[in-house]
Length: 338
Ligand code: KG4
Image (tube, rainbow, N blue to C red):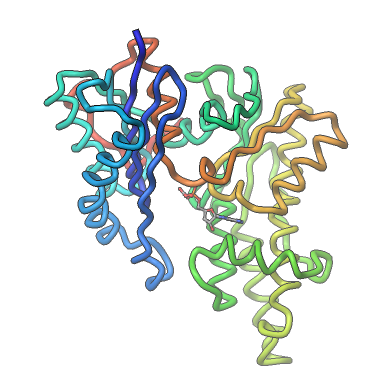
C-alpha cells in the first residue's frame, strides 16, 4: 500500500504544505509573507496572523497539485519547533484538527533536522543523495551548526555558534549599510561585483568546532563608522567591495571549522543546508573544497534551502515507516535541540 504524507511548515514567516507519496514529492506550496519587509525583520504577531490566513488555501493547493484527496492521506507531519510560538501554533493546531477529523496519525518534526533531511527529497531532478554518516553544515538566520548525521534520527551537533548565526550576522551588517531585508540575498548579489580581498574584518578565534559571529559584526560596524568619518558616502562608493569582503569572511569562518570537522571525523561526504546555503560564495567554496580535498558535496536546490514543507513531509515519511507518531496533547516548542 502506498504511503501518502501531508507536510505542514509554519515555524517562521513561510506557510508551506507539501505532499509525498512513497517518499516522492508530489507538491510543495510556499506562501511567503512580504509584510515583514517594511519592518526590516519578521514581526511575530504579523507572522501568526498571516499563517492563519494562508494555512487553509496553502494546504488546499498542495493537495490539488498532488492530485490527492484528504481522505487518501495516511498521516500529517508538522513542524513542532523550533520557531516562533505564534507561528508554530497555527501549523500544529491545524495538523491536530485535520488529523483528528480524518482519523489518521500525526507526526511531529524538528525543523532543524528537516533542513538536514531536505537532501532526501526525491523529485523529478533525481539528485544524488548522501549516504550515512555524513556531515552537514546547517546555516540559517537562527543557526550555524556542524552536524554529524548518522541516520535520519541520529544527529550529533559537533559545533555551533555561541552567539549570532551566520545569516543573522550578514543580515545585521546589511542593515548597518542601509540595504533592504533580508540582507543575505542583497549582499550575495553585490558581492558578485566586488573584490573580496579589499577589506579585512575580525574573525573570532574560539576553540573546537564552535562558531562565533558577533565579533565580525562589531568589527564591520566600527570599521564602517571610521570610514564614514573620512567619506560620508563611503558605503555608496564601496558597497560591492564591502559585501564581497564580508561574504568572504563569513565563508572562510564557516569552511575552516567544517574542514576541521571533516578531518577529525574522517568524513568526506559533506552537505549544506539552511537559508544561507543559497549563498553563491558558500556554494563555490563547497565545490572548491570538493576538488581540493576529494569531498563529495551535496548542495540542495534553492527551493529546498529556505523554509518549505517538502522537508517536513519527507521527514514524516521516514518516521511513518517507523510508526513514530505524535500524541494529540503534544505542544509546540519555540526552542528544541536537535
Ligand atoms: O533558513 P532560513 O530561510 O530561515 C531561518 O533562519 O529559519 O534562513 C534565512 C537566512 C537569512 O539570514 C537570509 O539573509 C539568509 O538566510 N540568506 C542568504 C541568502 N539567501 C538567504 N544569505 C546569504 N546569501 C544568500 N543568497
